[in-house]
Length: 346
Image 1 (cartoon, rainbow, N blue to C red):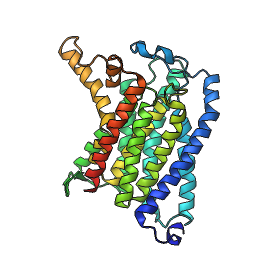
Image 2: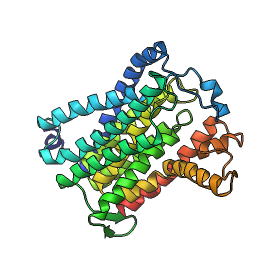
Image 3: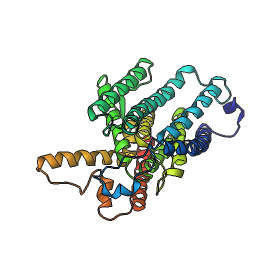
Image 4: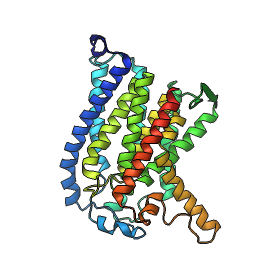
């Protein structure tokens, strides 16, 4: 077995090496998959619908979307091979039960990605402008999150103790943990979806959170979190080759909901939900800015808290370029990730 045959390398270093290896493989497969699928999306004219509410996006008309398919395929292909090698004892020595949280994390990501795919399909192929309604999305996301939590609980892989960052204390929630986790999962996958509004924005923020999860896995000796987060980073870096400004392809709801599901799966299976929330505050504030805008608009009978929501559009109206917004948001995310990592390991 690989782990047994490598000498003078501690567990943390080995986890880091394995995460980077998974990252590299998924990166290469994502680049290849996107090169193959992009012409198909163009030929089928599966182009991003442009919301006239966002006038700055008029120039993006005609850009193919649903690109999340590319990195989901590459991620699942890599993880299938990795799990086979793992079960054959060639790269590790896990018991079957230890693979369950990883498998359920993948299921949470794919199930949310499937919801996004249905939404994209209805909009782009069936030409139903609104796709899934907000209520339909919410119900489907709630069912998926509830099923994930139920399976985690049934297999004894769900902790009901909420670890508080920076202090050696966990708040025992008991059965109430299921309700708390459910709300957070559904809210979070929508936050990654809302963030996907500028070229490379959701991808780059996802990379920063994924890298932080790799660091946590190395420091805490959490091999399967390392593998899942390495997969996420490789997928998004590969997609960024085509998604950076000016984007040749968008991920669509298919990709953005997948990202949210994977991050939440890692956070809950690792027992570091609050630390990951700190790391993901850029995602979360994007969602909150839309919610605050809506509430403030109703309470003030037409006044706006931001020039436009979500908040990245506010900065566009302040004459920030897309590159500047994405760069600043990414740097802020890196700082928040550093804080979250410290909170997890102290």
